[in-house]
Length: 235
Image (cartoon, rainbow, N blue to C red; front, side, top):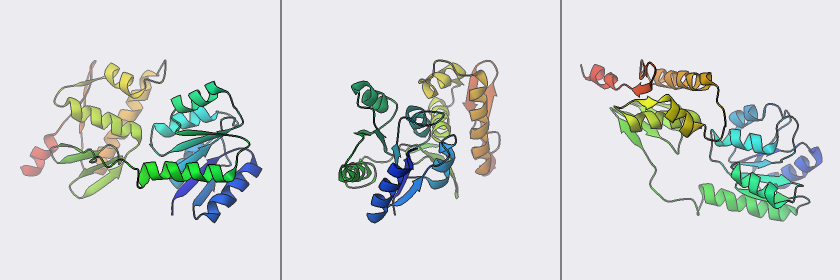
């Protein structure tokens, strides 16, 4: 059963959409805490998100950018805003489609089915899945997974991007500035500690696979992937 998450602060609209979606066999989650939208996203792992623009605290553009850091699931904006620039902003911030209020539920359902087909079904890309490998370590960027021997760990989009960069650069060093530019190019300023925090998370993912000291810090320059674990296994 495919899962749809509704991020809409008008409870009547949420109820209307949820009723229609449930009738068509979808599992539906309605967000109620609009300060912690990503918590619900992590818990429910939806196949598609219906997202309003005008929300308490942060707007829909912000939450779409947060989703895009971790997932490529379809995001359809539903908003009372009708300006062309609003639709442009929705697409520029990672949205896949835009529906204006008031809407016909059958139009919403048709757009949902279309996006789900494109992402997962008959219209999904048939290109061979990418896989990067170094010394037995396998990274599946589109799947957001990393595997070593019989173990597999799930990754966030940022973690997968960092590991892919390290694997691409090996045995060279991946510079800090290069990582920041490629991973956070949608932000004007990024706190210096942001990359450190994400590198720490990446190291923990390697540890979950039983690989210790996989990421070497090259002081003043950046980070380098170490593949000495393969030699240790063979010894």
